[in-house]
Image 1 (cartoon, rainbow, N blue to C red):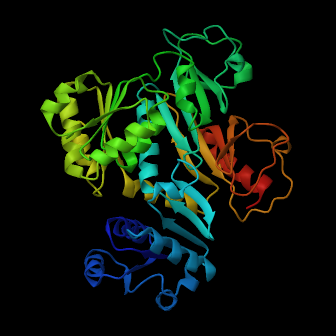
Image 2: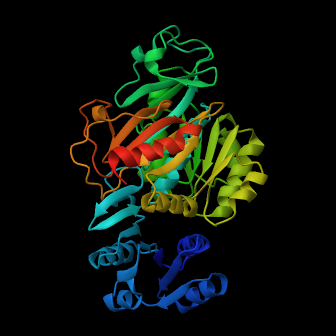
Image 3: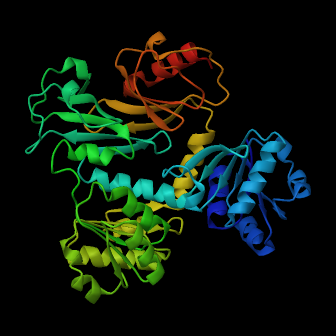
Length: 448
């Protein structure tokens, strides 16, 4: 595969290294000779010095023979224009990094087919979606992001305080766009229709839109959600975290050194306590009783601040600490120092580009805990022309159960009359031994 990467900064170099390591032919374009020299010294790739918004530069890069064009400079406008020009000359797929959150119509960090660009990615929103997933997983055995972060699937154990003991799972109301999709009993996946009553020790497979998932968990039991949460950093990631978690968390506090950011958060998120202060000042953290928090998330623009704040939170007794990591390869350092979890914008951008560009129908697989089944995410490509195919027309292998469908990144009802469309995502619980059979079935019923 021929790949062109625009931008020789940290993100572009990280992506170019991954593409090159996978055996692809990679060209890196940047206006800085010094940045390209660093790339040439460390990677087996071709380089081109120039402005990627100029068509002669793109022509020199031979993008007409390119399979994938990725623009990840630090300038949103350069990324959008260059990726749009690439599509204009028939590049198969183009991806642009656009970091301005206000550009997006949804909070998930991915938009499709804007100005001809196959996909645009917001690094800060990808990070906030991942950290929200990690916070939710503190209460569950498993929580996964699927369908470009539009759907969450989680495993919630039935234990003390569960509100729906002895009820059929089909009668448990979790609210709009959320449902019980299955039950794990004795380490075996069971369909909802097979279970007449929910017992203590059962594990419920909860499936829903990312926006409603956390609130739905709280309807099962008070032990889900309701956490006292501290966020260090009120920039794009911190604001999005506070916005995404405020409905499901208990008391929430945001700490930031910038007064104008504090003002914005206090005006837009009334339920959030905002403190103007330094998240690495242990006296201030003591004064604000950070030790009473259940989790702390350090998401400033400085790795040193995020690491220090996370370690101070741990020292004060916060049970779970999370950090945003900017520099590639540093996440392991945080892990070794005892930080509960990290999120790397470089890795998340790379993961989403892979899912958006892989030729495979099955774009993601996640094992379910203590169970032979896994979650398999199927993406119907944009190029699919399957006609009038409805869910009710399809049959799947045994031990392969359809859990959810996402159309246009929206949680869709599982109705027999639902028509499949290009760019839809299907989520299955499938026995790991049947994954190849599912792949063959997809090719047979939907086309190769």
